[in-house]
Image (cartoon, rainbow, N blue to C red):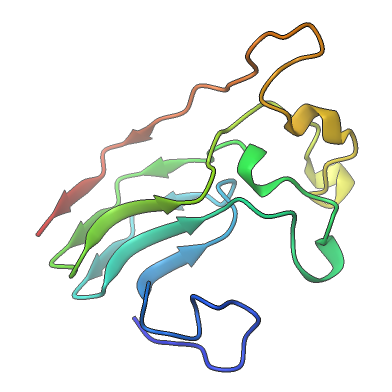
Length: 131
């Protein structure tokens, strides 16, 4: 991994959480990747409300987990597959048709108006993590 000086991401500017694959969105598909000898293999850092033109228009921690399949993370200093933040996938109205934005922010909540839990099942399959 490497650092990215001058970005607005505090973690990207330091060696705190270098990773071979770094993403802020769980809805990115990651399939068939190989990462070794980094600090973290893959780091999903969700939990904010977007950046740049998407600021306030997305609920990162509510994003559905996309296809995470067949990745290999080995020999990393810390973790292979690592998530940091509030990664609680829920069904939302985020789509390509809305430029990836959430129109109805109430769908980002963990509970429905009636008080029912709104979690969305997700899985990571065929991944191999080892030191």
